[in-house]
Length: 419
Image (cartoon, rainbow, N blue to C red; front, side, top):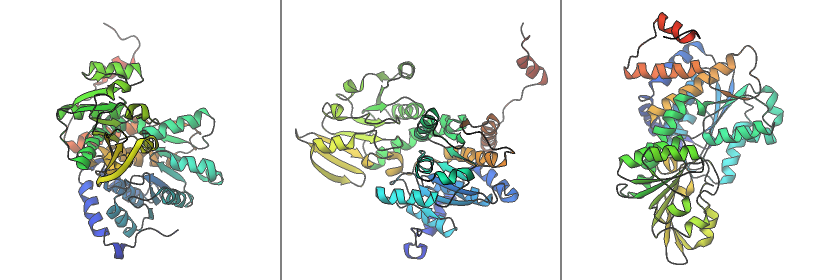
């Protein structure tokens, strides 16, 4: 399959290079890793297939892996998240990149297959699509696969299901669950970039709006915090009693979604589940509500049900579809229900992706360097890697912290410690 960018014809690579450079200045941890990788070549001879959002931040990860000696093939993990100039710049840099913003589903899956057919030793997923396709249709590749990485909550959910079903056939590291990933990427990254996407798509004022956050995991926490900071009246809907209790204690309204549907102005799903916003909720919503999704897949909003209820659909703005219902109400869907922060904006700020992608790079090195292959399982990120990413980030920020004295270390490690 041919790469999808003729750099000379498209004239995008130069623009992409400049934007990749701009992101890199906010990624000091990855920069330090890249400089070491360029000298040590820890990934030499390793073929890697990465299914990630093709953004400026991702480009810096891919270039880091390449400098580390890896042969990398990249495909998009979402049809609307690709930044075409970035993809063109990567092609120019000699990295096969299969991604076009707005590609249809058939093209999306052809691109996934192109990445799989590179016969990787290591996979890197944002949603578990590579792992799923390999296990379903390319099992012949599994004996040569060292392992994989997964960096989304949705992907981790799918992988846990595979583990429970006894279906997973090679080790995968749960990068998403690293503290320096979900505490920062999901909370601060998703929180800011989701609102960025909503605002860019609509230019609405957030202050004074009733903003309904569907799901109070780390992404939902970040979104609620940022929305409240901009003056929104935040409503949280949850199915987990502990998460719901936390939302109450954090100062938000908590109620069932059917009740929230009657009063909300903006609804954002961040759950990883299917049909969170469904026809029973559309029936209750006010005229003019805005729906957006910041979960990985576009099935958190039941778009087929919305299509069925609508008597007319039209595109009002680049990322805004107007669904007019039979009773005259209008429901506005952003970014075709896909990740609004990437469909309508640029995704997470580079400074948080710095830590997420530092974890990806270091976990790749860790997995490849093992004397004995890791056992087939979903593995946590080693605490030493997590701590090293945090240390490097603090160092880059010019922040110093204390170190335990030997006396304090002994005290904490002794079961006889006491008054």
